[in-house]
Image 1 (tube, rainbow, N blue to C red):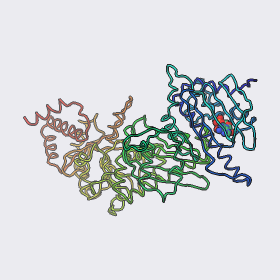
Image 2: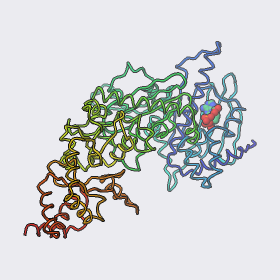
Image 3: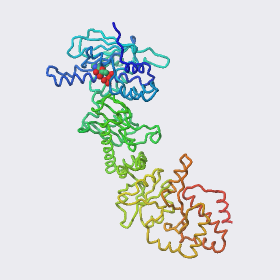
Image 4: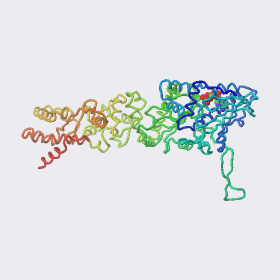
Length: 631
Ligand code: ADP
């Protein structure tokens, strides 16, 4: 019998398959099963339009059998089958979307082997993947409307043969002669019942047609109450109707929770689920979850965002990143669309219009769900925010703030007034009319911010302050700039908009003798601060540091902890409280003892640094100076 050659590109792909270093060889079964499922689909659609045919659901199924001794796996279906010509055309060449993309990619990159395995891993290349695990692949098929069967057989790259054979019923059998184990590869595992069943469950659980397998089970021996015996029974291994294809009303929270843990989305219980069934310009189904707890690797580079992507019930990608914006990377779940092809490549997915629409749709749904959670289940939302609030704030800050509209109402910050996290909307709603700004204070912890001297003036006015304790907070706030036309203002920044006290303090600075004193202090600290001023914000504390310009002290700390040469510094202002006892001592020292003034200023400046959590330039000198004062 003449051996026919594969088309050139098919041969190359085949070589890759056979020598594949790809570790997920198990996907061959997924590919064969989905081909079978497609073949049954075809006969089903034919039956819909051809009155001579009837589609009896019972008669359509996929069967997986194996023989450990003979090292054979057989996947058979009662689908539409293939004619001789179709066997030739379909299995002799690869002209599908996935493989075209493969070719393209190979033209640009030289590491063929690596690319090949990536392709297999991400999209599957269908039938050919059988060669990853088989020495010989035999396909016996009888097409609908034909009395004859044909046998296609190939050992791989050398080519294939086709001959006629008998087959009793319409459909296809794919018979794999499984490779012998090698030093590196274990093929025996595919000849184990539990393993095959596991692979079917993992990838093909939601195939619409029953996947039958003979399964070993135990039952009580007849006549005995304790003794069990093993027996073999044909079972349907897949669950067929996936949760996302069921009606929401038929499902309980528990069903969704089970699905969440079955699919290993997380070990926690999700806070919320969203079940979407969209029809129209874009048709898809999705089940999405908002987890409660942060996955251990969430805030690391290792964390991979994405949703499971199914094309018509067949899993084609474990983590499709394009479906989720980074700021919602915590969302788990899946999307199933009938409009996607099984062999679509990642490259093509990125440009897929359908997928873009789905992603956009999903983004809105998640946002609405979070807003609803915030509104109706505050406690749950706070839990969520504890785990993932940081990610939302990153979302505001990144991409030059384009997403701030989407995210700003989901933000929460600890409030000086409420002593708990509040939203910006809540803050605005209780702002006194004359209050100009939304005030915030940045620091390491709530406890530390509560003691910050800079907060005194604003608190004294009865204004609420938002406490920013996350390193990303101030960057996010600066990106927002304003909320409902109210500007954000750091309590440590200039112009706090607390007018009345200003005149008095300005007066203090304006007095002739004080002007000289301030000038003297400024010259003492010339290399350390940008200016020295009478404070408008201090009430009980003698000094504090304020800043001017974009960079705050907290931001300086964060930036200086990052690797890199550039360490930008905030423009610091030393503020002195002219109403404080200490100010009198300074005036006195200025008159009588300049050395003492120098000593005092050193102490006060370092004290201000300490309160900011900034390192002292010379801790020993500071300690010595304290002793001097005490002595
Ligand atoms: P794809 O599934 O992406 O089309 P494959 O290489 O897996 O690519 O299969 C090539 C073609 O062979 C299929 O499109 C189909 O026409 C045919 N085919 C494969 N398996 C079967 C089967 N079990 N029954 C009928 N046709 C099949």
